[in-house]
Amino acid sequence: MKFAYTNIKSGSATCVLEINDQRLEFYPTFHSDALGDLVTYLASVHPLCKLSWKEGAFHKRNGGIEWQTGPFLLRWEFKRDFEDLEIIITEIQNPLVDRIKNTDLPREVLKAKCNFDEFVFCIVKELDRIIKQRGILGYRQEWQNDTFPLDGFLALKHACLYNKPFEISQKRNGTSLEEELNLLMKNINEQ
Image (cartoon, rainbow, N blue to C red; front, side):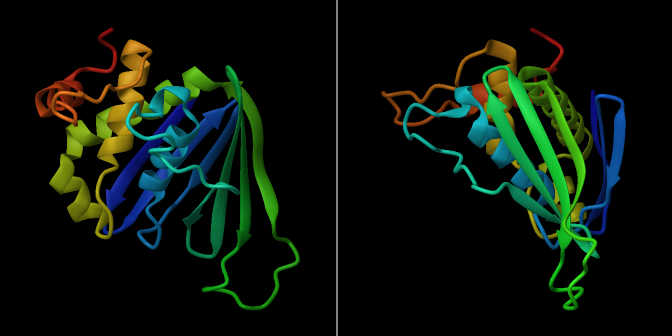
C-alpha cells in the first residue's frame, strides 16, 4: 500500500494511491482543501481521534469528501468495519466546469478493502514527510488557500505511535504545546 502527495506547487498537487494492485493518480487543486479534508475525514472515522473533551472533535461528513481536480470532482468515501476499511473513490461531474450533463458520470474509479491501521499509518507517514520537508508556512505558501492539517495529523500520528488518543489536561484545560511539538518532530518510524 502506498500514498504519496507530491509536486505541491502553485495550488496543485499530485496524489498517488496504490492499494491491492491498483494504482491511481489524481491532481487536486487549491479550489478544495484536498489534504486537509482527507486528514479530517480520516480522523473522524478513527476511534482514537475522539478527543476526550469533545465527542466528534473531527466532524464526520456523510457522503465523504470531494476534491476539486479540474474537470471532475473526486469523491472519497470511507466505510470502516473494525480493522477493515472500504475505500470508494468516484469521479462526479463538476458543475462549475461543465453544466451539461455528462452521462459517463458518476464513475467509480476505486472500490477496495484494506486494513484500517495500515492505511492510516500510510497516510500519516506521508504527512510526516510533507510537514518535515515543507514546514507549516512553506506548505501554506505553496498550497495557497489552506494550511497544513496540523490538528488532524497530530491526532492520527499520536494514535499510530501510542495506540491511544491525545489527552486533554484537566489542569490546563488544554494540551501541552511541548508534547505537541515533540510529537510533530518525532520520526513516525520510532515506536
